[in-house]
Amino acid sequence: MSEEHRRYIRPESLNLLDYLIIDDQGRPGEYSMARTLNVSKGGILVETHLPLPQGQQVMITLGLKDQLIDVMGRIVYSAIDAGRNHSGIEFFHISDNDKRVLDSYIAAFRRLRAQDIAKYPMPITQG
Image 1 (cartoon, rainbow, N blue to C red):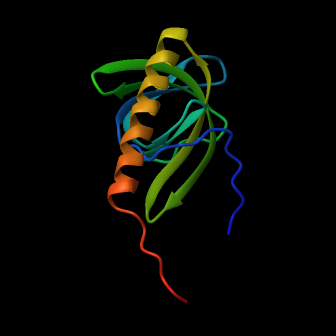
Image 2: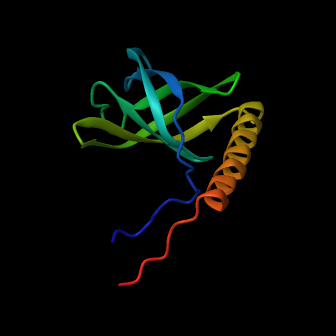
């Protein structure tokens, strides 16, 4: 069992986003679409068609319900899971307004998740 190192809870999520890789000189690079697998105040886990370069900065536009937010992040890891490219992106710049939208989304998602857990509790098994 692996030890959890995240500072924030990351509810499972599935949202589309677009991203733009920023090179070391601040120039725009690859632009593409991805989807989030989970999201938190501190970052996101995304699934992409191509592997993302660890350590690169990335500008992200993330759709949360009917609102869009823009964040800057750094790719902190990239891995292949079940044949799919997964990358963890840690946020390092987000406006105060976008932070409020993100916080509202996470709070609503937690409420829905708690309702699902109450509705469909995990069965207790005897071993």
